[in-house]
Length: 115
Image 1 (tube, one colour):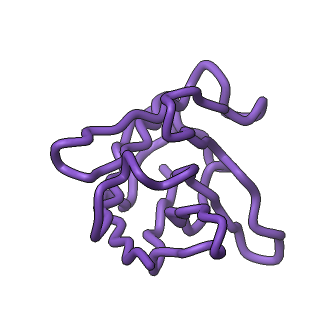
Image 2 (cartoon, helix red, strand yellow):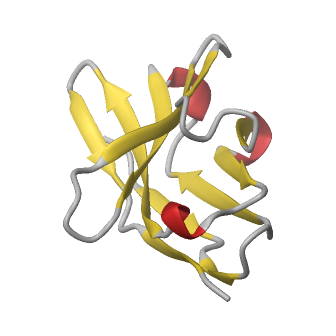
Image 3 (spheres, rainbow, N blue to C red):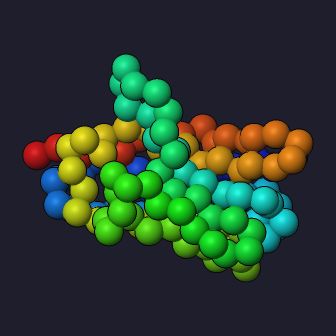
């Protein structure tokens, strides 16, 4: 099992930036895939970005060029750097750890992009 705690959400103006952090309770290098999902009101949860334990990354087309995913293995933390934010990026962002035994989720952090 792994516990995940997100932080870094908040209110930002369009065009602004935020960095989300996801602290894991164990070594992230041992977790198959770490990812960030988001869910806007009335919409399904969608994958935003992910990083496999080998370091390969995936960025969804709708945020490519604006968002990046990275990790600090020493801190057992995964980050989502979000630049050039748009109102349509408003959502609750969730950290995910995908293991063979199942999926583990953080509690979510709200990101609101509004002027």
